[in-house]
Length: 185
Image (tube, rainbow, N blue to C red; front, side, top):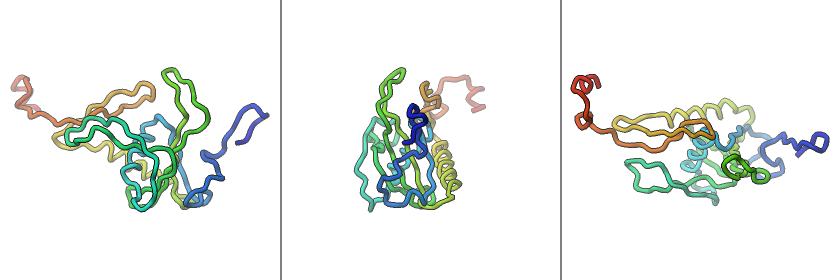
């Protein structure tokens, strides 16, 4: 950590360069995703579902998952802190560093640690690959299935629509509507 006039702490790297990794971070390309953003949540969820099985992954948490009509479990496994290796949407090995930084912060509604998620690819100049990976995750999240609909709620603090649940659609005959309107549907 560098300082300007010994008063303002400044970081030029989103991770400690002397941290031991399974790859050389200085010969890698990375993107940083800040906690609370929609993309952070989507990527963290993707990583935990696509871990490389032969690697050791030890840190997880669990939470209540949105109600989905085809799932029996109401809990979902989430990414804990640490380094994880996973396969991206093109079966290429990527690494995710999930970390909490600094001291707890008092916010309007809670006390939290600043967290971020850094996605590495162990090659230089691969920012386009990382952007395509994020685009693929967003597209997958926005897919819809015939016979289902998604219910969202607005996340006021982070300013995005959060998936609440996925439900089976009712047949139109079970809906009380004028026949002319049903015919249009």
